[in-house]
Image 1: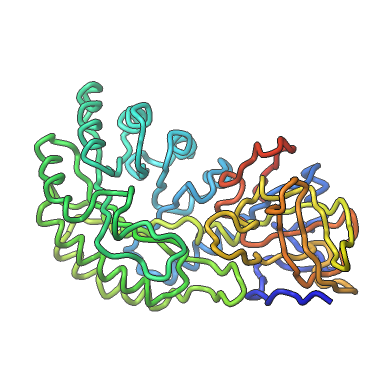
Image 2: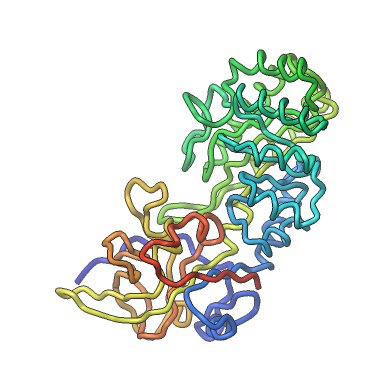
Length: 411
């Protein structure tokens, strides 16, 4: 008999009633009928609210919380988040339009990312949002486009620090990087911002993502504050915004445990008086994406076939990596590991079996769960992938093999 993969941290955020997952208070089977098709993503408003409430009561009240729209740009979800957070960060013109549609004040929207195209820069300047500058060329382009519009662009400098967030899922700072201005090059560019008379707002210092080690985040915050205070001596004006990035992770894989917020909160509390003294106008911002929305979302696909191949059972679904690239292991994993997966309408079930769940694509990469212990599923049952609220549909090759589109709902 094939051995099952190790188990995950218990997935208890979504209630189970009569062995069926509840999403937004609705049984999964009824929600699927209401939507009218599978596969789909479903996001739970209650869980979004609860995650924000946890951060508000744990972190110092002076810390501002911004949502990184790239984690999940579904318009209804971004609209909901805009009512909970202090600001939004975007990474494209499309995301900017979604952010502006929420009614969030433009001064509370920032735009980060390398290689911003002139139409994106023109739109950002016209909207009055803050542009996080990533290079000397981008700085000069923004200044020229601002002159053409007869507007004074709001800018911050994104810094590529000389350190990284240890044990992070993706390293966004430290060493040679396409993101931001190298810390050692920042003083000259800060002087240039002053010469060009741009509306300087502050710094964005982001080093990594998906981190579950509080000690690593604390160490990175220490070094981030030290760097910001050092760079502020060369700033062309007062630092009004100090975005220290995010990096907060969620448990995806066997062995992962939830991030402990308490040491992070205590360290931020320790730093705030120093920041207030040295940078009296600065708002300290945590920019979070995955941590805010990742655990509030599920991906749901329907079993369309069962087959046994040389003694091993496969469940074949109508969803796969074209909708959820990350669950297949092809979005940053070096060695593929299973996300938490259940049969959503038979969470425990009366019978269990070790199975591999695959999608309908003609590639061996299309795996949703490999050798997992699940309730025995039949054709028509619903396979659910937890931790699917971030970097799901829009991070996937949706046109691959031209299968039907996936829908998203907020409940």
